[in-house]
Image (cartoon, rainbow, N blue to C red):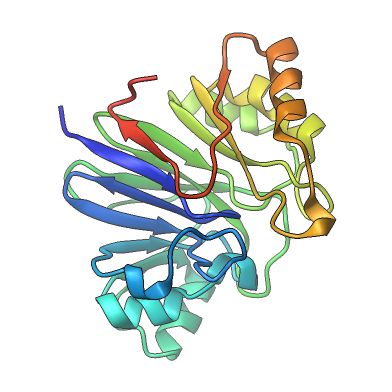
Length: 229
């Protein structure tokens, strides 16, 4: 069983290190809560971008050029990223999947949001040791139940900030549809406009989905893989 970790980099940015590969998701590394700087990123193999808003596309282009990482995203977004000088991109769309390695497969799933280039998506990352769902920016939608049926989700990363995404109330209902083992709230408290109390979200989940464990973590915290919690 391989060892790895999932680390929150603030806002919706995460780093997944597994099977000797480093994957960044929505790498807005200069966000106000980020525990690292761009200079700290030395080796990145893949970057997954859920949509083109600045707080999710972040420094994708700069990081990809620096590390020669391959960028995964919706076709129109990867076309734009290629035009910015990024050499390696993999386009996909909702319902599609790609194998990053023999052990790591990425599925693009719907997200209810907006985007200037293509459509917004979430990602399900499957491996023999862990399955992780990053919802991207999204409102609550009933087809989350299908995502839960299709994938045995270990960790769901859900936005709770409200205004631009689900609030804690909607995110708690999302948990009942997705049925993950663990859920980590994200996309909150980066700005005053999306200030939320994650303990309130935890309380709601404990009421409606008591079988799911809420992990409230701080930017910089790591979750060990295989899961030891």
